[in-house]
Image (cartoon, rainbow, N blue to C red; front, side, top):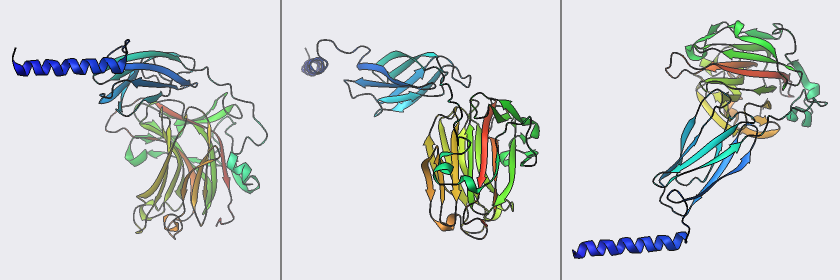
Length: 362
């Protein structure tokens, strides 16, 4: 036998012997994946963990069958080689899914998980019409306007719906896309709904209360839909001077069917477009209602989700300069088609809106 071949065979046998020693008498199935197990479930998520006796995976493919709350069918994604945990999100309450993890070059294993039944919302409690921060900081006596959206239609004494082109010219914003609907998960059993169609016809509206500095709060959820629809709660310059440094505070912006919400504080240090920004993000189940509260004062901009601080900017050059004047609150379902002519539908629901004075309010 060729000496080189003998040497290669000996090296291979040694490697196999070492691998058997590492794996024991009962090597893991599917080429090295030891286990895949479900470690946590909620009404809309299933979290899995996996392990391997081998470190040679270059990455992982995660997949599920079934349909999510937005109507999307079987899904597949990729994770880096260091990951050993993944959470499948936006799942249907009470549904059973087969979850698969494949190590690149190591084979695959599957597990079955069932989401919990949808949580029954608790009955309204005293003070529930205000967010946790408003209650803990004593904002309630400072409230200057609110809307619980329990009437038959949008209150035009409080709101001005848009009738214009959509966000950066995409699609259309039309008043007909805004209505009040029954919602058993809302505090009062009714909620404002803004709906977006597949061709980008959507809705948005401006609150008529305007002030420089203050506090705003919204209880909102984004039930389902195409992630190219973004549900946004924000403050906007009343002077319409965004192109000249008027600023913008997006204190809750989330994509439909994506469990992450972002905060954007837009400003300008040059007097031009308000295209500089500081940002924050938080992972949260967007299909459920959450309180989003923001405070804008002379000394800072801070944002809370259900009473937990998740954004703060204390640099006065970002929000306390002459052009950053009075703002009014807005609710928008913005369409980001990303070059597509049509997308899936989207929606956002709001069941409470409040504006409060701040001691700094002008």
